[in-house]
Image (cartoon, rainbow over the protein chains, first blue to last red):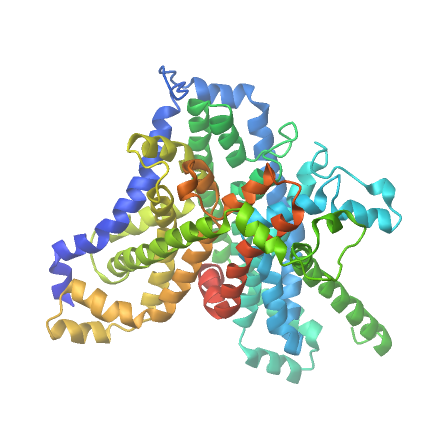
Length: 293
Length: 281
């Protein structure tokens, strides 16, 4: 094998294409955004502003902060609502016999379909004029609960959070399901011999073994909440009255709707910075926890 | 648990399974609803029904969808983009992964770190700068504007999956091949690519799903009709034909169906590649 390491030219041939793609289309754009973020570029003309865009964002832009708050809210909803339910479903699925494969496919389907389609579908379900949800509420005698689910600034964010949880549920579930399938089946037999029933086995054997998976998936959930874009972009575009903005939708509307390219670039740069920071932070927390084992 | 009487635990179990069935239905129902409406008359959408048996089946909606939504042309564009993205992503990522996983080289640490950082960078933060770059080098409104960034953002995940696979593959065949006089490129193209077929199919399916379902880059980088992809079929129905709900639902079904079918065929591969990192830890 030593001979292979000497082939510097061939190593370069293998690396180059991949490197060109990620340098040219991921890292170079970030550097361009960094440069533009110090300007007031509007597509035609620009002046160097220094840190003015960042000052404006940090001190005079409540929407930036509320989009961060929405991200935190979604992350919390993922961890408190979506993941416990996903874990429960994943634990039960292997005990359902011939339904197992069916359940696994059905639950994951929303995650496999284009967000473009699912968002449009939910817009139809939640619509105030013709939506399915309001119609069902009226049919079961709860007319007073009827809402403008996406048009009311106080409620829209919760509708968005619900749909985001629905869309991502299959993925969260799949991760736990795979983790549970990785638990050796001898453990189940051993537990049965020791007189445990299914509930006790799942609670005392499966859940503890699953805890590293749970921890990693919580990290992924927080990051996913932070990076949320497509569902919001397609369902509300951040509105009404910016009540459903997330960082990505906010930077998109600042840049492409308002034409504030310099300002949008500054949000882009902060977005990348926060993502790196969050990942680093979560990894640090994770390592510490694993150390206790 | 043991102190509880048997009928009681049975009741708990029934309630438990019922609520889980409810979750499963919640996951699948909206899709059934969508397909159902794609087969009804447009006016039925406003009725007070939740689901209704289509009589007769309104296949005309699909014909309308194809015509009003420009489905055939956009479908072709989506397919062209997907095929190129899949082919390039697989080859480029496998080449890069081989060096990271197998070659004992001082720069590997930095190379792996770079790929990791690219995995963290969100696509959305590159939309604006890429728009300027593409504008400068005249890539707006070309297939390249969709193909290039799609590949770039698929590389980190694909490299991650390939490295995971290579780590479980013994080096014996490669060593034998080197002794027989194969060079590095020969090893990758004549040995590694053929033995990696199962994992290549996983990466290819993931690349397909990503490209097929991608819309934000398409919306940002494409203006002319010639290069529009499938999501634009649906956009047609937000304007002029907004009241043709049935055709709109037919378009949604047409976009969703290939992904669902592919998932049903490749369930195992998709599951193993998607869960690779998160489950092993």
